[in-house]
Length: 395
Image (cartoon, rainbow, N blue to C red; front, side, top):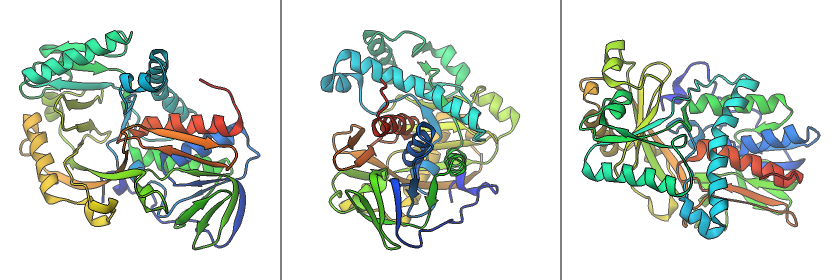
């Protein structure tokens, strides 16, 4: 069980499984961030819409309930890649939209009373050798070339970086305010509660076997809908005709016991900054609201045939590696007890580029492919889909 799933106030018992055919205006396949944000903005835009969310397991079973809890403005595609498909101005606007999305999520959390330990402490990434320091400098210079100033990302010297994260061997680093730490399972479960209260139906234990125009087919009965939204992310490959659309890759995490005040004084993260370093193989961590370190990284193998299995969530070799990486990064963690180890699959498109679509003729829509940066990107995708479906004009 993940750290996030273990909190006693969260009820993971599946509720309201579909018991027969149903007719709605919008059927959303997938009860994660993308599906729920889409439902939220749709019902806010048009309360008369009949919306049903169909979830094979329980809301938050997938990456939305297991991730590192970074509500980050990181967009998985670089500005250069975005510009190649649109324009330089389009790339800038995309990043500005991501920056604004962190604030939009914070506003909804506050307005709707979702208790998910949201703390906008920013993101610090330390450089721990000369190569990483060169990457940090190049990263900041790159953002300057795109017209983004210090309010987007700034370079930290060794002292400034160590004041935020007292890691080993610090040469410097970068800091951006456009990131918040949160409890991902509390966010997804809280959002589900909000949309239920707005009249959206959520059918858990209701797996969709096939999506066709006008219908989502399940073993419990067909759900007919003028619009069907696919929001299945890392589980997309299980749907007919989509095995090669999204690659399910695994990311694993560990968590420590709650640390003492003296240990935190030695580590830093006084504003609950999210953190990493500038290595190529990505790592990510946060200081949780109850004083633990939740820490994850890549390194789990791809499973041929895009297989997804519960047994893949645990890999003793990778979890041991993550514990070792954290101890090396933060010497103050040496001797601390690790209490949790878990993992899950995320969705990676083969062009490494998130996408969404809405075909008004067929009524089919989709969003996903966030490459592990989905907490905020899914909100932007859900808002955009809602605008497309309801015909609202937006940026």
